[in-house]
Length: 370
Ligand SMILES: Cc1cc2nc3c(=O)[nH]c(=O)nc-3n(C[C@H](O)[C@H](O)[C@H](O)COP(=O)(O)O)c2cc1C
Image 1 (tube, helix red, strand yellow):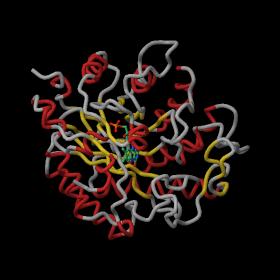
Image 2 (cartoon, protein in one colour; image 1 turned 90 degrees about the vertical axis):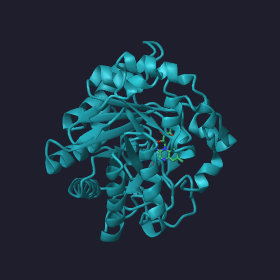
Image 3 (tube, protein in one colour; image 1 turned 30 degrees about the vertical axis):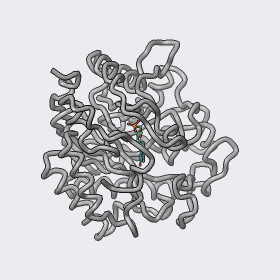
Image 4 (spheres, protein in one colour; image 1 turned 30 degrees about the horizontal axis):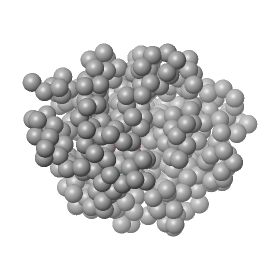
């Protein structure tokens, strides 16, 4: 009997059907020259399914809009050649018994923090800001907003047409949707900005509604959110559960099926004055939709500390806590990040007790597509 057994039950939400509750977390790898995924990446994704996870959320992919990403090795999710490569990944992953979910990305005004010198088209953002007093991108016009929404719809429809299991919209970590959510980066005076969250969420809600209208009621839409932003870890969109509801309820009403709540450490309380629930726990409680939790599962340090200090030690002590929260109904799914970068067979090894064979995560894992 393994601590993880309760997670080995199927999950179903519309088109998304998973054999168990584990997903690979979206992780940018920058191995797609000219925006086209290679066979090495296809094999890398398939190996994670063979290693036991129910599905993969892909690295963030560029939507069909100049400046949607700021590095030229991020895979595109448009154009015949790039989509054909993604379709090979889909066929292999599904053939291995897993689900595959592209994460559609628009960086807004952010240059790429891994490749800040990479050439890229001009960037765009809600108010020309990416942080407090930090400039990034030109201010989007109403026409830009409409065009970006249309680009997200094209990406979602391509995913649906090709037979992907769901899509995830990257609404976290300080990128375009998050730049609209955050009052520090959204100073707009039109209907997409304002002092209340309800108006700042409008751009994302309209995007979701447009995808829902085009894709129909059954295609699964996942939306990833976070309070934190890259290099701005204390930032918060919602400081209370009531604000969380104002933020996420319009997205649920627009058609989001599952919320992916990105945190650096899943065991931390989202609102410490209330109780010990994390963001996924509070979202499930307030919004009532399925949620995905993530953040340092099986590791002792969060990802940003790792980028600086280099190596995380596998630790299984957090798994008791994960199981306790799952049993309480806080979330439905768990995304695994760095442990799967380091070791595609992490899940199978942990479940079978072969923990002495786990490969530790180190920064060097970033250099290969093993
Ligand atoms: C190399 C790397 C690349 C990442 N790229 C993305 C990304 O493209 N999209 C995204 O939403 N999160 C990205 N993340 C964050 C992960 O999805 C995940 O939330 C984070 O690593 C925490 O999970 P972990 O502690 O299990 O690694 C990335 C993380 C890593 C380590």
